[in-house]
Length: 148
Image (cartoon, rainbow, N blue to C red; front, side, top):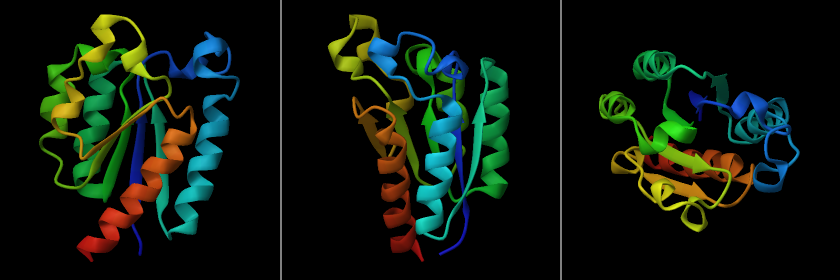
């Protein structure tokens, strides 16, 4: 199996390991990236790991993924609950999409219980910490193997 997974990270995830470690843990985004790359390699896949605080940049990467990726793993962070634009962009992508949240959003504030992204996602992983990214990569490997 070959192909690239775009792993997209939304606002404030650049502060992972520093911001609210009691919720998000002590691993940095660089730690997550290294683990994701390693996990993808076990399945013969590559990772393009990206983070932005700007909604338009995430949308541009989703558009780019249409031509360059077999799947998308996305942790849209706060845009989960607010961005119809990200949902619309994801709806243009034909491969699998897995939504990841480090914390269990359903144990948090009520506004975090709704996700626009879930309307497109083929799977949602929440509350598994940064391991959720690895679980998403494993799921994508299985889904893309079934398509080949």
